[in-house]
Each structure stands twice: as C-alpha cells, then as structure tokens.
Image (tube, rainbow, N blue to C red; front, side):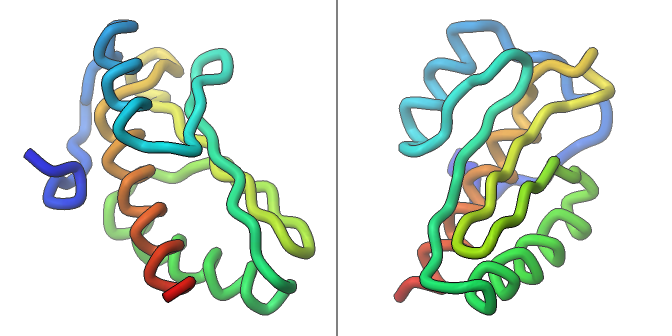
Amino acid sequence: MNLLDQHCSHGAPALDAGAVGMHLAALPGWRLVDQHIEREYAFTGYRETIAFVDALAAMIHQQDHHPELRVRYRHCLVAFTTHSAGHAVSINDFICAAKADAIYEERRA
C-alpha cells in the first residue's frame, strides 16, 4: 500500500533494519540518523519556509505524530522518530515523511 494512503496508528512497533532501508530507498532525500529519519527542505525565503511549516503542522496534527523541526530562513529540517517504539523508527515515521514530501512538492508546483 502507498504510504500516502496510510494513516499513523498508535503503538506502531519499531521497524527492523531491512524495512527501514526499504522505506528510505523509496523516499529520496531522507536519511537515517541515530534513531530517527530526517530530511532538510530548501526554500526561497522565510515566508515560503513558514508556509510549508504551517501546512506540515496541519498534517502532523491530523496524523498525531509530531516531528522535531528546525526552522531557518530558507531551510526546514524535519526529523521523525516514534517515542512509543522506544525512540526508534516505525512505519508512522515513513507515512509522515511521505506526506511531508507531498506537501513540499505541491508547494513547489
């Protein structure tokens, strides 16, 4: 099933290394760092960055899966991990990563 068609679920277990690698291969730009996945998005200016963060906030609130965000003038770093899975990577992280990518691509079009 397409990640964009899925919704986060409470209690999602940690993924094994093989599953993490498979999902990372399907989401260019994302990388595994320690126990989270992250991607940095680039923008032309602060208004565009904040507009992305606002759209991202609506999605993550709906999914009830909140990332760490680092917002700068023309960049936003998004990092997902699943606290309930022992601060490891779960399918919820990849669902939200795919949805974040879709928001980014939609805003660039």
